[in-house]
Figure (spheres, rainbow, N blue to C red):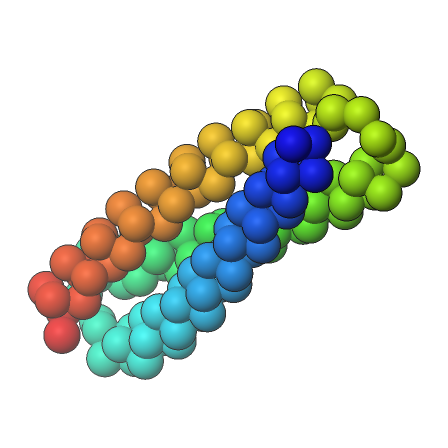
Length: 126
């Protein structure tokens, strides 16, 4: 059972990291798309929107990177505990996993909202 729980943590971490990798690629693509569109925008308000999205993309790409790094560290800690202990995972491991799960859910929500907003922006300026 202990191995099952730790194995579950590890699988979930790998799933999160893969999803974040995909998000990073998508946000990098959207950032390039924004740069291409920005070359054709001249209105002051629209340029302010471009700057807003540039900033948001940079912030979210940093958030993605940081969360991926934290998930990897947690995964390594979990794997180490599995190798070095015969007992159940420490409460800290489970607590850290739940905190990362919540951080992942929150980031996913922010990324989805930003993507929706950006698509609306593209529709209005394309």
